[in-house]
Length: 177
Image (cartoon, one colour):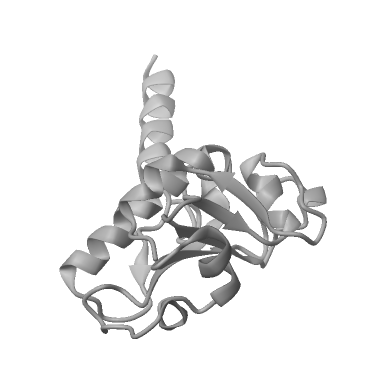
């Protein structure tokens, strides 16, 4: 009887003492996003709101493959409190997206995938990639994805080298040109 009690104590101590490696995360532990630059609070609010919409539209990445995300960075391209532009081309880094979709401001979310993935299927070939999702409002509010890897992890149609535009009316809070 004492032997069984001692074994139970040893097992409990081993369970309590067990530590996960520092780089391991549960499926629900996704790193907090950071901002590439110092922005005004209003501009950060735009970025965080757009990021939340991306999480909903690309829920498979965050819900199923979240443990493979290393970092998340948000860039607000030409935020309203940063400068006063003289033409729409001053607003966006990728002018053709501004022109095509009527975007005045772009929110870019860059998600770095770990070099060694545990949950993303190997045939997606996303390991080590930085997935970049570009979002805007305007007359065609949505999310632009350029790489096949970005599209696969979200479960979106594959563009095979072409941009894929995912409609997101929720992004209409972002100003248009």
